[in-house]
Length: 147
Image 1 (cartoon, rainbow, N blue to C red):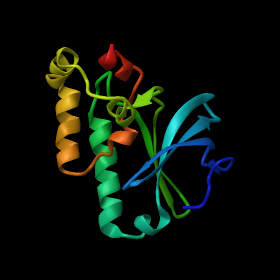
Image 2: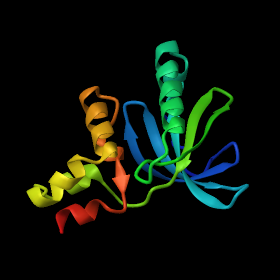
Image 3: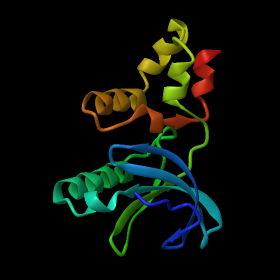
């Protein structure tokens, strides 16, 4: 995928790359209409031409739009500009779950309570079905796991 940093998609000015996964790349962007930072997930152009991958991307958007939980980023929109398809989401600052795991084992007493969280169950389901990459799972609270 070509470098998008410094470019504009719709009214979103791309400022930095913050992650990538099987369904595309995630960028930090500035919403120039509302003057706020957002996350923009861009589907690769080749994938946008593949009906199955495009349908998966749109299903992901509908799933995100149907969820309302403090630990799930809010979806602001499913957008199209020329041949590019992208999601615009709430920007969640913080360390990736992959980064937390890389630091070492999570103490049992910290891991057990989170295991009952509905978001954690959703993440586990997505991980086993390979629909989510933990390097893109961010929370300002992951560091609490290691305390």
